[in-house]
Length: 435
Image 1 (cartoon, rainbow, N blue to C red):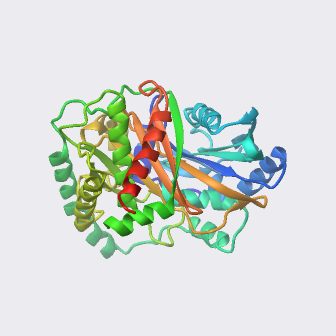
Image 2: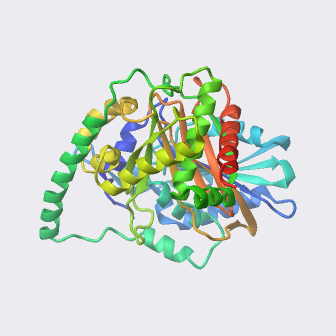
């Protein structure tokens, strides 16, 4: 893995990095032990495992050719213990206290002169639980590939070796004929994506979710019963992800109304990241596209909101992940590094012209995950905030629940409690129309 060239999209995430726009993904992972645990033992175990994973030892190094490019190279001074911290919270820590602590941690940028990841072990939670806070720069991999990081740190499973081996596999070389064909095909796709982006730019006033960029973050966690999501889906159709988007649309509608904001007139628009990686892609690089989905916050009826979501997502899927304005990550992956170094930061400031928020669903395996024998009980993923955005939402399905991580701009949003409550009320409202 050492020496791999960063893709155009990887470089783009580096270029978007700034004091108010740290471009790392995160997760708050909660474990439920049967009794007391030793934080020092957990930290030592994590350090030992991290030291054995080659791609956790790599850092970004610039290249002369191509100019502005970068490669991953092994850090000669790598020390896994420098990436792992232990903190004990005072008293019987509540979920809100954990969220507050995690928010202060997640807003700190990673040191890109070192391998771009950190882990913090947090104890003092209620019920003798403990949490892992994970932070990983988006240039390293995407959400789908991030599980390979966790696979190397959690207790070994029968599939762990396969996941780690796939992550270290170099990209398969392409013949000259294949490269030529792909180049011709990509040229047409690029023109189509760029044209779709121009058509999708909105001449509307400032988004109701827009906010001046700020380094401050606040976090919130919401958990939904997956059985309820399936009940809604069985009654009204669509996919589980359609139902989740409908729930979040209703939550944003309620939240905006409570904040005194108008919801009539037009929908919000979400960028929905879509993984394009194959089964054998491992954790190597970002392999993303996306869909733009209209969130019908202007629609009062919850079932009608779900129908609107279905229409929007079905249209995006029919066009495919390599077409449409939502495929901006694909276009970014094909732009040369020097262009990113010059233009990407400015382009990132204009994200609000295309979408109001990012909503991502992080895939997790249907496996019983443990750390030092302690079962994983909750996992709340966190998506980076785009420039001038107030809210970013990530979800993950695990152990019969949908875990939703809310990350907001702390200068624009005083707390996440009302948004978290709005998620739960929106889900209950849609469920009541389904039974």
